[in-house]
Length: 427
Image 1 (cartoon, rainbow, N blue to C red):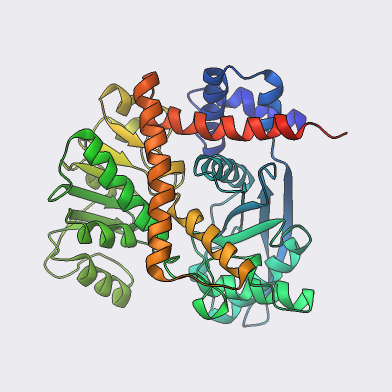
Image 2: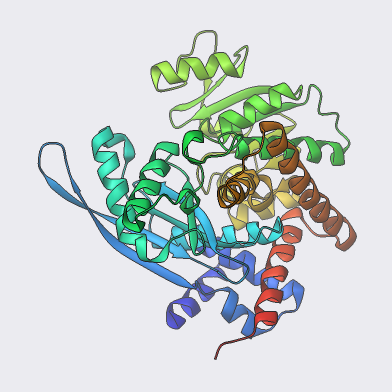
């Protein structure tokens, strides 16, 4: 681990390497330098607490047995049990999982949740799985990581390629092994199994709040402001819906097949996408590529798909005044630098998309209490926590002449570092 960490640290200093892990380490290095923390802090904060890599066998419906790689990274447990999503995607690897677990650590600290960061997943394309195969894969993955998860240890949640159905299977697998029902082992569950009202839309709701507040701070009236959203899944769709309800104009959205403009409402577009599996050729729309969407002349751009969407190659063409990161790690360091030089305000992922983990925290609290809140209570409490974090980041950025990303990272990293120092080193 020590050797690998030092290699990763050297990679982070090279601007030509822009993997999610190199990006995350680069941002951590800058935060530590700006906070004037020690090399001991760097060594502690740049090293994951626990990494588990597992083989996940799957019996296909036709009897074939295939093997997949699975991961669970618990980056930090200093401020509480680790927390993070489970991703089913063919391109995930250990480096990406470590990077996302690191970002979750700073995100939970930034929003003052009593969690550390985690991430996990299986390197599989979920679209190639039948429903029965998906269940078998989910349950086997859960059984493989069973020794290190639990409501007081590590609480998984949905991410790319997983949903509340996967969480129900994970909860059931854990509960069967425990001998009693343990709803708090995962969040993002169906309501009838201890899920929280408002969890499905939470990440998108948080993105919408971030867009609204960033516009106000920029002196732009949110009513009628234009937005383009890359990604139309669990984050992009709900963000688009919330933004429309706030009075903003969503002028373009995209999925993996490309983007569309000219639609009348997000709801109509979602209905078409659900029926056809794509946004392409939606009636009354004009098509555009994902790159063209990034370069539209809008007030706000929301990258809400996968990582590395805004790079050195794409950043210079961005005309939006504000970029609000709905996805995890959608911007590389070189893309960030170009946007900063061009005066674009970037609301970083660990702030903008924190609505999901905030409401996951609410779900966990409700499960522990066996007392559940109304949808209005969830939305009010989400807004309170997120607005406090936005204010802290905006004030720090203004007072110390920092970018929002620098301010957010410094707040999150400082809180984890302080917790490390107060707890001390055992033995």
